[in-house]
Image (cartoon, rainbow, N blue to C red):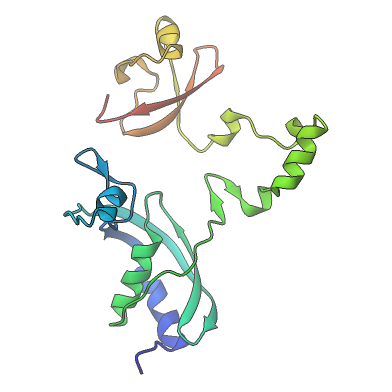
Length: 197
């Protein structure tokens, strides 16, 4: 049979856990030579993509939806392509596969349990009670590491200027997003460190 059994599918999931390399799919937002891959794909152009390291922390079997369709849960690092993961799972069983649905259940400390239907949000806004369910920008990004902006660079930062990473405390030793605070611990916003700058 060309269809995997439930036992085969369940058995392959734990073998995927850990660090792995993924090649971004052509229909992704990765930039190549100033264009997003999905723009190139829509023009029928396929380009070589560099693999990216991602971490798969957990893959759990959920259920079998149809004879040829399974549902699983994955906990993974940012930048993981679930479509690619589906294809990689199938390859381990010498099969081909595609993703038919994707539902993000949590991200950056927020989960579906934190979500409200749009009509409830609109009703709260009309009642002037939106602040009872809203989350501050500081709380929304609480999972990011924090740095302090020196007092003599705070105005420059607030006006969108670039500052050397050597001016922040602690000095960021990795690229990515950070929460920025004043020396008096007031939340200022976010800052991005790219190529160590």
